[in-house]
Length: 100
Image (cartoon, rainbow, N blue to C red; front, side, top):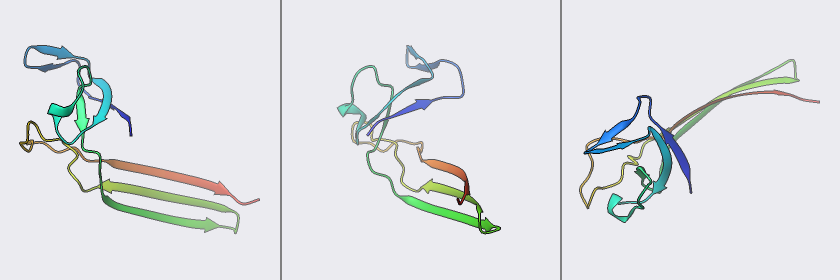
């Protein structure tokens, strides 16, 4: 598993270390097990709910809207302690199709 992250603000200050507002996501249950140089960690397992709504027009054109909402908090533990914040997945999509 792999991924990328990006923050809306400029550079981020952690203690006395300034990091860029983007990086690789490393999936670990505890930050202590992480790797130097990767700034954000996430737990490797997620669960949630999905929805899909669609409609077919004129027996040829279809449109679908979907969403996926993660329920699990993916923020990793910090040296065995639970973090204060939450990290959750959210995905939205739209599909348009045509039957030949």
